[in-house]
Length: 107
Image 1 (tube, rainbow, N blue to C red):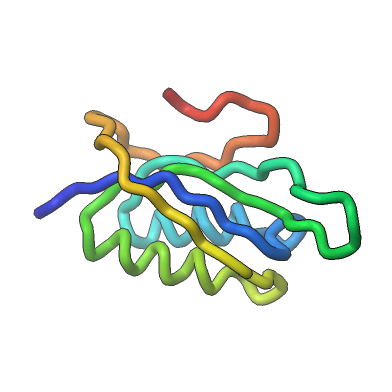
Image 2: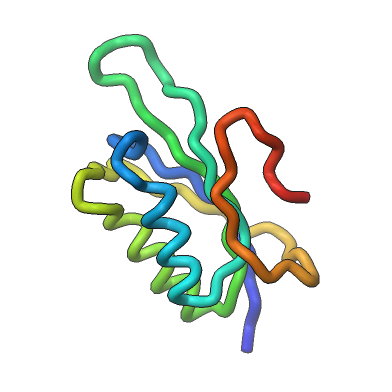
């Protein structure tokens, strides 16, 4: 069993569409720990990008399934991009949290 951890950022129509709830549900389904958080929009025009970001940790196969669901998003979302980067595992982390914009993510 290989445990990995990733930072991730999702861009598109991902705010106001229950994207974070969708992400928490996927994490719980696959035994993923970490968090998800809204970020400020990028740009100032009608095509500006909404962003959601976080960290996800779990077994490699479970992470693949989790990121497939994140990339699909809830029905009202439009995901334009999913970027992820592997980072060191956090020992002892067991929950996945929805973090409010402006709050510090879990350490």
